Image (cartoon, rainbow, N blue to C red):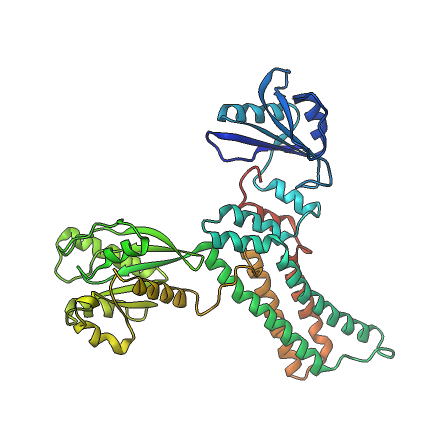
Length: 445
């Protein structure tokens, strides 16, 4: 059936785009598009856009993309109209009155996949690209949009299929075909397992790029936490005062470190003797410590370490943390005490200190992995689950080989691995799987 939707965000703008796809597109176009010359494929044509009764709704641009040379692989009509919510709404109502139905979320891209216009993981990358909040996230989504992940996983799937074919030939024709040698088969399976584990690791990095990470800035009062937040942001976001206890609530802002969105949370200073309101802020600080990936512990490095600083250090022990001795330009009494713990010593007013803090956030947050935004990576939970299932099947096959069991017993595990990887390449994609993937999409895409 023919589907229609507004493809641009709601609200006023210069233009709105309404998209139609399906078998009735040409008939609908003949009814609602009036132009001096006939619509030509992929040519933007100035036209009057009519309602179902022939009254003029707007003057805009119509673009016809005939099947199969369109986004969905079907006949597609795009109407570029003025960006009034009223006009867009009336345009969509007209299309529904002409026989189209409202598209479901992601249905245009789903039809593109079903019609062979893109790989399944590339289709999922469309949603990631739309949702990208940093340039790094957009680049990572584009790497998957090119279809490289399907090709990479497809090679591993093909390698497993070849082993299965050799096993099947030996089982079916034992007199004519020799059984595959155990050693080479085990070596090939280990290589496939290594490639899949590399994909797993790059997928975790890709997830980090898409979703970002969180960092809490904690420490005793007046250590310079809010000053650090302002310095990393490059603007005066948090109120700074020499009076202890100025920050009573958490303040959240985001920066980008090596292409990754990092949510910074400035917290209330932690100290034992606090009034009721300040204590509430400290409780929120402790919750923030539990919820974030990394903690930056800010200590006044110009004075000896006191009980308050030691309390903060104890509370954050065992967490992924960065020790920062601030105010080193005023003295190093505290810095000398903490130096065996390899803290960063400096000042929030020093550019090199801020660069060191960013580098340390990246080192801890990325688990030492290099972020390669050009490499295709696992993105969805479906893909992670598929590779995890395949690795489990390969592990069982390796146990069978190492135990000296008949080599044909690994066939079932290899078949399971091949089927699991098919969820990544799109060769195995049921309706439930497609529903899970395209549920993340917006209507109109």
